[in-house]
Length: 118
Image (cartoon, rainbow, N blue to C red; front, side, top):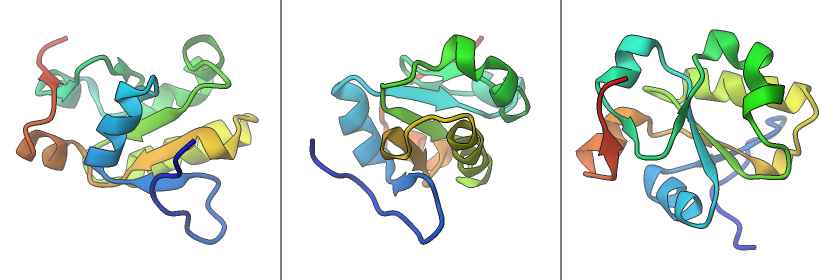
């Protein structure tokens, strides 16, 4: 498996760009958008699941498969980083957790596959 992104000291996840995220998604990774409902509706990655960051702990076991690469995205990498920390604390494998630190504004600026609405 090709290694993407970089890992900062003490972080249980890797930081990746939107272009790296798209490559991983095309290889079967799951994109998880952790923004608010109103943000989700203004545009989100095609094929992403929506779990607001405040609901990650409650919904992870039911909606986030273990053993699959999980790519978390928000607006600027802060909430997605928090979501990465949460799933790591729940026992998800660090090597499969990624923070798309560029965020949705960069995803959309680069015209990557985007859906709109609920």
